[in-house]
Amino acid sequence: MRPLRGLLLLKLGAWLGMMGAAAFVRHAVPSHGDEDSDELGLVAVFDGIELQSRATAFRGGSMLAWFGGISVDLREAELAPGAQLTLHTLFGGIEIKIPPSWRIESELSALAGGVEARSPEQNDDPDAPVLKLTGRALFGGIDVGSKTHRHAVQRES
Image (cartoon, rainbow, N blue to C red; front, side):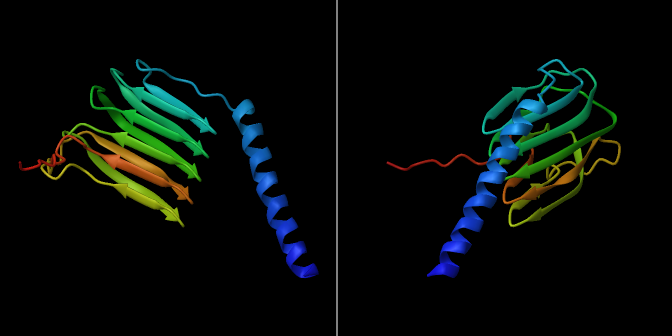
């Protein structure tokens, strides 16, 4: 019984330490950027952020979702050359919608999480604007792609 109690206390201590660190990061690293910003620095800790960008020369930036979620719609934004986004999740999720005219170059990875970053199927134009993605999903998920081509489910009467 004593080893089990020690293991439970260790897990509880690790969990409380992670929650304390997340609370510290929430106050120490504020988000910056809005719908007109060409560069974003979004931090969602125990929170959610939803943003629809209208940037005229989107250069990228960074996003961190720690026990939180971020949803960014870039379908109305114009992409600047060399744009790069760094994405990190820890028990959180990031979803980014891109226009069908963009291409994606992904260096994203996952550990006990999931990553899906895809260029639109119809876009094989080598001159299309490119958004480069780097980062990692730890016990969370990252989804980047064009959502305009999803099929709607129809019910038959």
